[in-house]
Image (cartoon, rainbow, N blue to C red; front, side, top):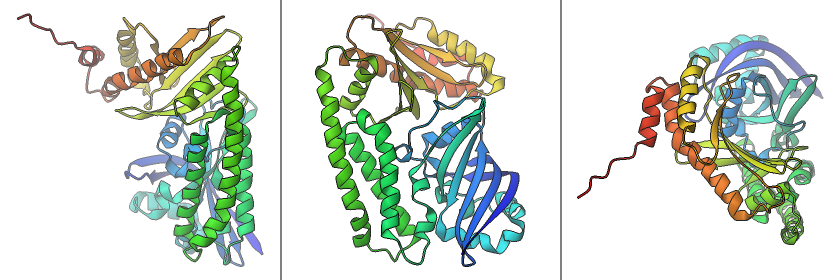
Length: 401
């Protein structure tokens, strides 16, 4: 018989990522499920600021890998409202909690202060299940692969392969509805491989009694079925390349598919979300089709946010950086401190060619990567805006011989 206990926390906790950097979260509650008086699963719900969520998403903390997320509902997150994450603890760590359930809030708070490297406080030992945000009477967010494949399935005395198979199938069924028509076979195969690897890793660390043969029996038919579906879908997408009257959204989908980018279409919006790895950092990008205005816009979102006390200095940096820009410009949101680089073009009756999109996209990410060290230097207070720009844009004089 399953017994569920809900512990209200309402306290600040400091967790640690793989680099042992601290992340302060607001823990809301912890739900512990028991089966025959034995802990079966543990879920922690907590809130983070949009800035911290950006860091979590960019670095795939709490096992929040892009390939394992469903498409978001109701558009993008509001950058000024906190975001709620529900995460499940690795099953093998459940015994760490059981002796302290009479005062779990005090126990976790003491751990946070006295044993910062305790396994319970490491983000890698938690699996994000759901991410959501309440705003203006509506809720936006998404589910992850881990929410379909409950930790309780891997903590049972005997693995129910049918139940696991069903969980994986349901995840990919929902995932496919939002992604198969906008992704090439290579990107889909990578996502399938990521799910397979993540599943095997979880099984290895949670229940060593499962054999590799059993894992293969669960995964292989599933992977084969979805790869066949991906091939068929890609053929349909590929046939659209020959249509002269291609929509702007389809044109950018075609580009990122051909150029081997992994991306997710935001549900209900003509927007693609992507990740780009530069020389100085990794950050999120958005490609937006404005069909009615006949425009294509591409954004790079700076991976660091500007604190309030640095807004004026950063505004000067942005103004100096934009001076003389030919393609695109930096933008600074004074409300939340977000910096983005924007490139765009009006299409009208002209075709949005592969070369044109490539120029706008790669100019964009190159500029973000080039100016990012200066942005960070200004935020950290190491360099004045004028000197930061001078260091980036310095061109040595060539002395004639």
